[in-house]
Length: 379
Picture 1 (cartoon, rainbow, N blue to C red):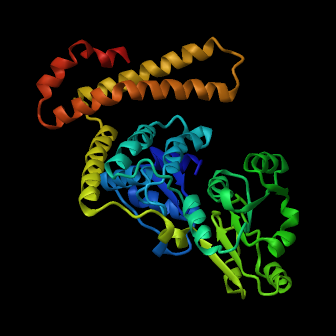
Picture 2 (spheres, rainbow, N blue to C red):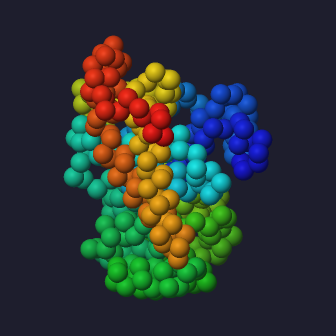
Picture 3 (cartoon, rainbow, N blue to C red):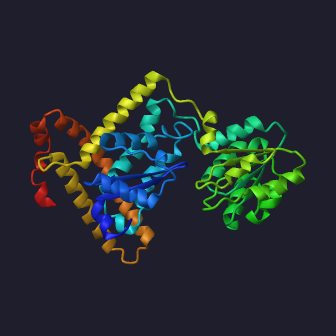
């Protein structure tokens, strides 16, 4: 999506990869052409797997996603960090497009409040915790052997929940990461070269790697099951793309679950009254967020935001000019700190002023912003 043609088509574009889907958020004046371009790049298996939302509906969806209300594990907290980081995960040529950045930061920031309104705070919720609850329910043997393929956060969360009653094994391509995870969990260390042995000996396997192709294949699994002499094996595939070949679920003695199958072991959503309250709050935030993306020439609040952004940019450039030896990572840290500070300081006043402006209190807004009348010139 980095061609000049696509840069003309999209004023801004952010991809968000969650545990079970990819979402594309864009600012464009040509929605049909933008959709066609995205379909060509993402190549979904079927049109049935695609949905599209616009305007306030799209913003409301992002707020729900950030709060974990659209996750397998209802209310999971980890997704907010993914939402916050999505704009910075773009190629460097796209990072100067800031149209959607504030929307994503806002959605991540509001996620805690939305979960609190839904009475979801204080309980660990994620696909990893759902996997752990499932395995705790089905593994009826003392000290089962549970193997982790991968040493990332998803595998680690599940393993930490299982550690009190299971014997853990960690295997990963990166031996250094595997050793660190195994040490933290008190687990045995193996490598992915040991996978045939793991398939023969483990009672359950949690797969959560970033491998592009399945690690566990039907032929290898059939050989392992022949040696196990009828001892069952549970496979939980948390990987995207899938770490376990789907045909493995047809092997005798094997039970295979993927992320979508874990929904019954995730926490239940709130009651209708709490849910209605949450949806109302989400809608209010989405309206304000979309309004912020559509500044009007006479919009004093938008002028305030544009001036603050210009000042932020100048201060960052001034600071970085004094740090000629700063690495790319250090420069990103300075950028992110200034961005976060500006947004946090302006969030409450701009939300209040936008509500007043939407209610027709333009004169009062202009009076409150009295000292800011020359903001356009200041930019």
